[in-house]
Image (cartoon, rainbow, N blue to C red; front, side, top):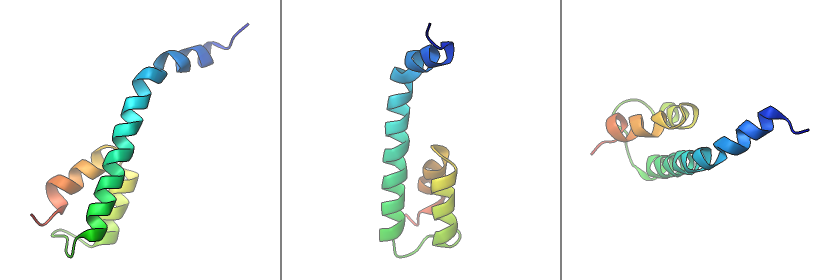
Length: 70
């Protein structure tokens, strides 16, 4: 007898993998960009690093939309 929760996770796995890849890609790209940049316009770098890491997919998007100088 299989666990119904495990069956549900296995059914959703093909949908979760692309989201996880996108999330990790955005997170890495945003952190590298933050570390390479000389200056961030709104707030210190450590605050932006926390936003990028702790706010999952939306954090890096917020950084690219509002935090960058360009």
